[in-house]
Image 1: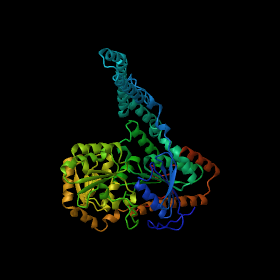
Image 2 (image 1 turned 180 degrees about the vertical axis):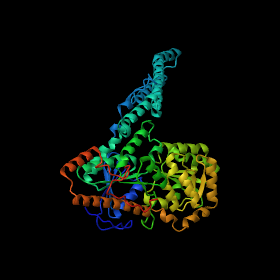
Image 3 (image 1 turned 120 degrees about the vertical axis):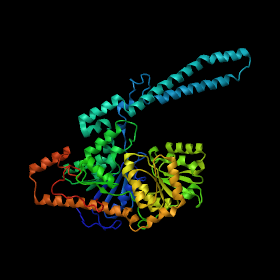
Image 4 (image 1 turned 90 degrees about the horizontal axis):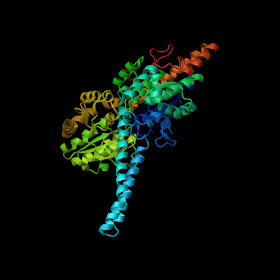
Length: 572
């Protein structure tokens, strides 16, 4: 194994590979700037990096991201459709359709009524005598009555199904009892019963990871943690050493469930709790979240902090690729006031507040730069703007490449972060905060704890009460009235330097280097102190069971003897 204890600066190529790193992420990579920057900067620092992501269309794909290789894997999810999802809610909706058939039945009833309407129109073209009209009416009377009754009947059964599924999602007594039973009997292993589709990712990624023979697995976020931990266990059974880096992007117990199902959150929390002890190093996005993770999982130390900061243009020159600028896409000139939001679109992100405030901000335009401009929620926002008479001042635009974001945002007059109060929103400095900062935009931030405190301390924007439309409008008027007051602090020495990806890349490189040093030391110890044959067999059995031989990460309640924790330049 080739090992170099020296840590080069980010972007400095060492001329040789320092170790094989496999990064795991549960998305299509292109919309995830943190993952892209981590893979590219690690490869530039001399690591042999392969990034495995999830194909959005079910077809394999691959490309180069700088010197890193990217592979997208198909992830079939048959386990996401358990038999219980196909059962009718017999207790709360005895007449309900079986899931999957309601749409067909309702549409068929509508088609029957429409067919009769057409037949009635065709018969109306016949003789216009009273007797002929009476015959035509009588001929269609019973079929029309039957079609009307069928439509009411199918509607009733469809409504019962919808209500039953809604109750099941929010948690019927039976569903909550099932969750409690599996949690009590299986502890952290209960996710296998509550949300077995987490194993779909193992079946899609596991063999690919094993074939790459990594020395470090970097698992981004909670779904990939289990995939990385199981790869580490299998490697230990083969007599190989794999170090696991867990990159926690958010505090899972505080996440709003991704789907309306009472089982989702307890299952994912249990999955994270089971596999967190296998991590040799933990990484997260803020010091506040680091402390939460340490207390929740009883970690030996706070996780390392790697901020979601952008790359500086001096390090990576921007190639726009012919993409029009922000104002050009909005169709407005340089003197028109423009407030921008860049990021995911969801109700808890507070975009409704931005739209509702537009009538009180005459002449001000709002741009929403989002991953999927045609999404249903954004259609609702457009309709809302139309009802308020401000549709011409709301612009919904697609994402640009991550290395173009800062230059793209620079054309705005202010950057908005109107998040609602959710636990994860309180503890993080999100990507857009740093992107706005490097674009030197005055900020308009809701009073979520960490971002509000940082904004006030730096003096770079105004804070308003979350979900308060009038408060948001006042904050926007304040920053637009005196933008230079809020831009000036960005010029203070060292402020933006600490908020760059180059600084974060050095932290990540130091983590990898420390883990490789641990591996080299353990191999040296093994060579100088041969293990008895019986001991090796026992270690192999423990590894296959996920026992002490494989469970050697710092997330365990006590550090393994004879190892050292990877150093972090940003450790608190």
